[in-house]
Length: 190
Image 1: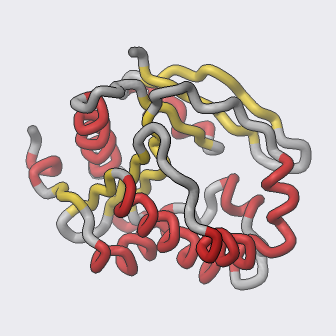
Image 2 (image 1 turned 45 degrees about the horizontal axis):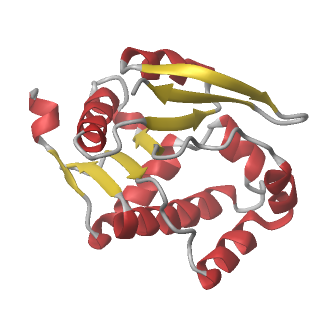
């Protein structure tokens, strides 16, 4: 374990506001969020959505943060329930006029017994220092230690593909969204 990995810990609900802000900064120009979230109040909507998703992941999965909350990773185990109806209504409200377009996207179904590497982000001020790789390693270690070692994810940033490949993921499908980003579905070996 390197020094960066020693600073990674499980997140608590108290970490959500700062962790959501970190993810919002990390995803400010991300192709999927730019396409799927309305431009009006984009930054605020993105941060609120990240907070909702992180709270759900803390409740049902694994959320890891760096000690300074400059990096965040969240994973959901197989068979994680959907957010409750009031939370889904909040998400729909934040997605606004983009909700229908997002709902029409057909991504490959996640394999049975696969963890969902839901998100990972490092604040841009701390990018390039190895925090993302350290978070990926820690998250994968926790997932592979479970009874369900397979992990899948989607990314719409082509540059992320090589990073994930370094950690054992392979591209299993590419989805081309008309008027939107390409989405790369990736999976670890069993």
